[in-house]
Image 1 (cartoon, rainbow, N blue to C red):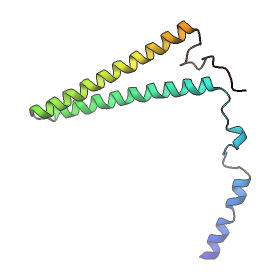
Image 2 (tube, rainbow, N blue to C red):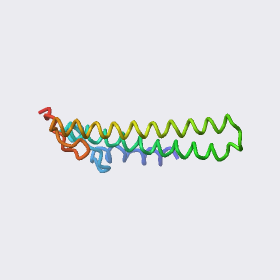
Image 3 (cartoon, rainbow, N blue to C red):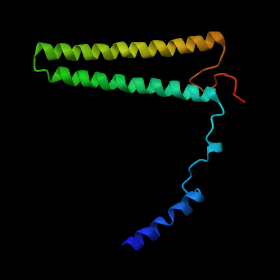
Image 4 (cartoon, helix red, strand yellow):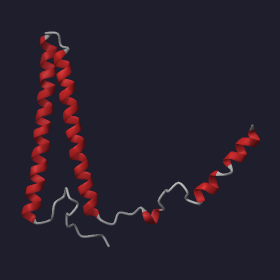
Length: 121
């Protein structure tokens, strides 16, 4: 058994040296456009916030349905739904604020990846 294991493990350095699994080398993994990185991060954050708002709305709705007329559980569910809707309003307002700022300052659209931030090189 030990002989088979050592034989199997002997192929690992060869496979990694040949870069056959497609792992980028450190010189290939550098950030060249900070604007695209920023726009991707903001877009991801807004999508994640939207998904979380939907999850909290569903969670609050299910809690309301299963409350069985208990006033404290119904109030907790209502508060959860209210918090989700306030969160949705905050996400929508932040999206609108980013669009307005990018329009007035003429830096491009952050959601399209065309924000004009100077490159670091």
